[in-house]
Amino acid sequence: MQRYIKKMKKTNIYRKKIMKPSKFVTVRGKKAWFLPFNFSCLTWKGYAYCKSQSAADKINATDKIDSTLESHETIHIRQAESMKDSWFRFYTKYVWEWICNIPLIFVNFYAPYKFMPIEMEAYLNQDNWDYCMHGSVYQWKEFEKLTLKTKRAWAKEYYNSKPRPYFAVFLRKKLNEINED
Image (cartoon, rainbow, N blue to C red; front, side, top):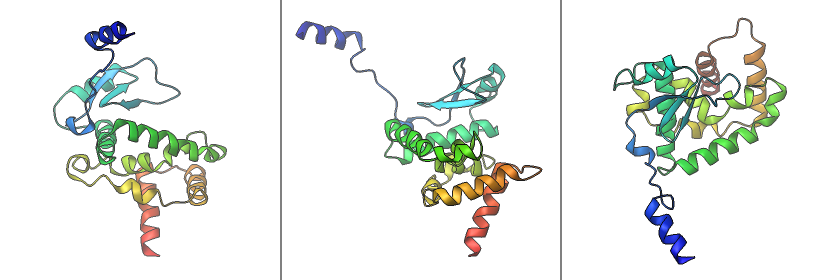
C-alpha cells in the first residue's frame, strides 16, 4: 500500500494543483461537445466551455473583457472568489440553489436556472463590463433573500409577458419595485 501511495504522488494524480478563482483575471474559452440542452457556455474552474468554436474564439480574442458572454462568465469567477476563494463552495452553492428552484420547472423548464441568485446577478450585470473587474460581486446574497413564492411570481410574469423582455431589464424593473416599497 505504501508503494502505491508513493507512486501516485510521483505521477501527480494524487495531488493535482487547481488554481484558485482569485488567480484568474479573465476567463479563457474552450470548445466543448458536452454542453446540455441549449446552454451556450459553462464556466468550469476558470474556463468557459462553449458550444461553438466562434464563441470560444470571441472570448479569447483579447485580454480584456469585450463581450457580454465573457463578462457573464467572468462574473461567475468573481462569485467563486467571493465564496472564500473556493471552486468547491461555488459549485456546491450553484447546485444547491438549482435544486431549491426545481419547483419553478412547472412555470418554465429554464426557470430554475434563470432564477438562481448566482445567475440573477450575472445576468443583471453582464452588460456592465467593469462590474466583474471592479464591482462587489456579493449582489447574489441580496437575491438569496427572495422566497420561492416571489421567484415563482416573477417567473410567471417573465415567461408570460409578450414580447418577453431582456432578462436583465426585467430584473432591474423588479429590483426597482422592491426598492420603492
